[in-house]
Image (cartoon, rainbow, N blue to C red; front, top):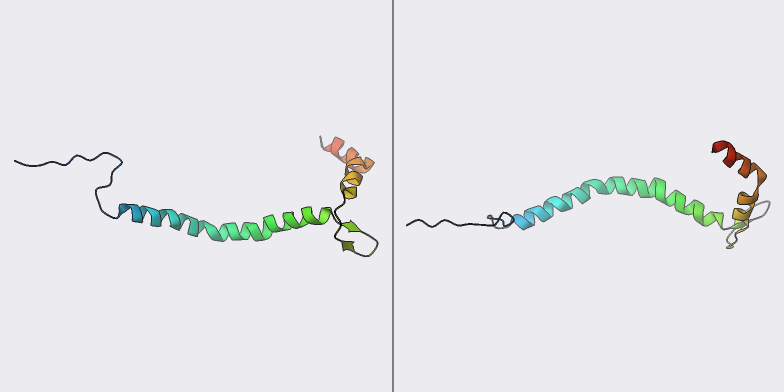
Length: 89
């Protein structure tokens, strides 16, 4: 009399298959990490710096940290900016 084993489609028959799958999933992240580092360094960090500095105040010679909305008020109410937006649309 022979015995046959029935396994469900999702079950693994080889021991340790879950650790192999985990290592394969982790290798995808390791392969993508240089791209993520480059994007963070050259894209996200400069954009974050621009956003932070846009709230600073300035005088004739330098910028200094001060949380002000004056820069955005000037940008959004400037006639040159509004004309540029209209021409772009």
